[in-house]
Length: 297
Image (cartoon, rainbow, N blue to C red; front, side, top):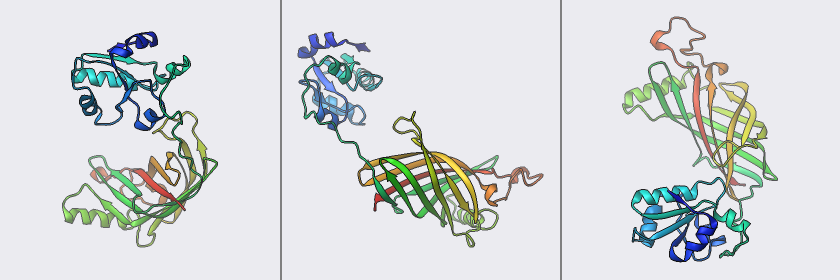
């Protein structure tokens, strides 16, 4: 892959097609003079470039944000692999171009970041918990629905959150045989596991949230601290989570963690509580993947 400097770019830009490989909203804000737009983050990147530049012997220069971002390098690699023969990457990107105070085209209005603020209600229709339970020889996975919850944001910082699980909604996705599927669900709903008749809901209440300063988009940005109530037993629980704004009126949250069911009275098949289980052992920990969507109340 060929990379070029800013001076080389200035010398070559009139004889090459310049491609801005960031999303459309960033292109509209600011792009190098004469550049066209094809976002490398989109699955249609190659087909869009092929439509714009059908001749694979054309001279092409790609650029993106600059700095540590891999956008330009990735775009150049994709195009070269597709058969374009004269592709160069200006890895300095917009950052270096601006440092040299060179002219840009566009609105020069940076895309506004969503600023969450206030009280958000959990959307139970689109929120979901995925669970995985294991033993030494097998595993099962399925879903749980939420019956309610809310998130409070003040000055862009998570203040509190809570969500309630509908234990009657527990479902298994991996057993295709209806008889075995129903048998497993009855087993999970009885006293061996979650005693759903007596405890139809479980609830997490967040009593504190620690922002994680070293996070990047798509990685946990908070550690949530609070209590989990399951089978009528309340225990402290902390776990990392991603809380982000889809826009000013919608939040999304995601977390993955292991929950020790035996702390809440679910003892069936636990190797720390029963001897000589053999093939009947069931792992103490259940893996939970929580995905929340919330709307501003």
